[in-house]
Image 1: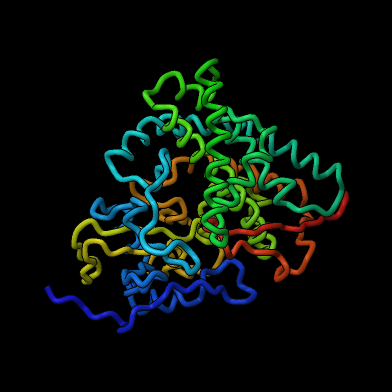
Image 2: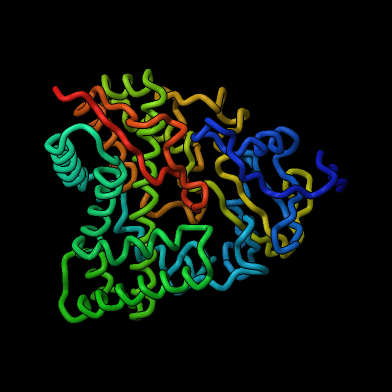
Length: 405
């Protein structure tokens, strides 16, 4: 079959520069590339020549195709400053870097513990934690960093309770998790953070092997055939994932709503809009913005031949702004039915904790807006520090204030 030539004759590098004053939009160059072709030849920082996928249907198809691997050692890193050459294999328990059937074994053990029904049963506890932190904000008076006061504690408490991790130990593991998500730390710092998290989890696993507990890690310690090394790896993986992603969605989602007051008012006045608004915020913000796959064999996609061994960088943020899938995609609209967005991924690696994240955001965002109807940024929007150097996008801090009633 004849393969269409790319609109770009020379391979591109992945755009990373976000336009000034546009903290919610993907790097501008992604839209231009997507317009020209949903699949573009790309040069990686280590010299590898692979591909960049930006169209929604293209990204979704590759994510769901077993001919593409997620194994880290087969991938090339797309961003400058990362490791040179193929990545090291995934640590034991890191399911994002596994393929079937190895991935299937871990996923099967965990899926039943993150069902829609089970996560909805937790909504009462989410509401309690939300109210406690909103009460604390109210008592302390106007002016706070919403990340520290609200966005980070809620998912942290929930994942700790779900796993059976003492929240009092959070200082010990939160810094490690933050380092692991950063793109501008040294390999030595990454390794130290990984080792620190593993050491902490190993102590916890030993305690749960010795004395059963009524939580997810306790269940796995008693009822599964996972080795200590596997249980430590899975526990660290779930803890790090549960701490960071939802916290950034709550903080960055609030930032987006406060800069779109009509959207905030709509959600404040009609809490029933919350589930729909959460899906739209997941689409619009796409904090987990980039994925990578490697072709296990020659695969034809969009009339182009991706050869075995070539890495494909998947721009989820470009895919979620594809006008062919979402009309007027650069507008935040909490009334939009944003079904089919890729904010939680797609395929066998779709986010395991997505139902818990949905419950947390669906409860937290309307409650925050209703409790503080005059909530606003306490600094100009352009002064809010953005996580442009992180694998999970968002804000480092979100200074807010409100009028006392």
